[in-house]
Length: 328
Image (cartoon, rainbow, N blue to C red; front, side, top):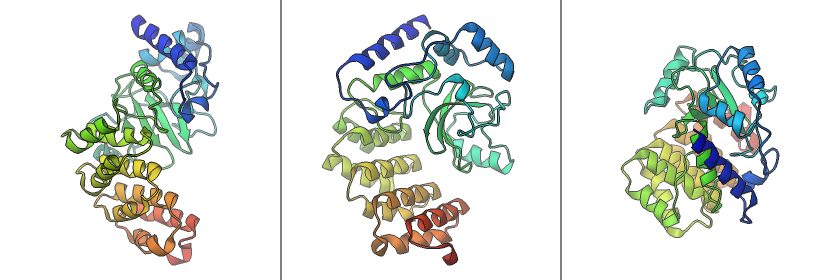
């Protein structure tokens, strides 16, 4: 682990000093281009004793030898003691309770089953990154996925979390640093792929692995401008990729980079998967205020078979002024 720590320290120093364009997320991180001072062993032990837990080794090493809070993905790393501050709703200080989910291919189904059992909470997790609103990156402290990181929407417990592919905190943070020198970081860091736009399009259109296609669709969000070939591949993926995660990330990238994305996002309102329909509506209302063209299709979601979609549609359409509560 000493080699990993030394590597991260060297990459962080280079990233903070090289005169290259920085992604917006890097410069807005708490503490600017710095990490907070490392924590002493005594402070770590005191924290663990207070909560009745032992921090995962990789995260503990980071805090002890590299730093505590500051520059990192999205809005930056939170200091250890801000893991459950009053404005960041997490697990009601239940770090010792096991988080039940595991990073398998059936995460969505398992999360729905846990919801039926009233056990789909984020107890046993620790917030390491506040990504905006109720979007967080969490570290599993207790449970079968201990040490793994995941993205979660804590304002919508019906939405399943998304596990990061890295096995521990140090690997996750080093992967983030590896995206920085060429300015490849997209606003919401998750699983990204190296390579230029053409390489990513090849993966998106030919890979048989859903995870690789998802990462390609997601990473294309950091390749500006969007090429004609990339746009065509994303539109095709949104229309018919068999993996809903690919379709959701294609929708996000098109909404971010394609000024004419409203039409294809509107077509995704009829996607067979309710998570994709919900995501398409969110992005459609972000990129378009044309109620005449898209209002009818959007209002159809007020009668969607999924309660989650209906609630989201009612809230978003009312905010956009496309409907009022008296109409649903």
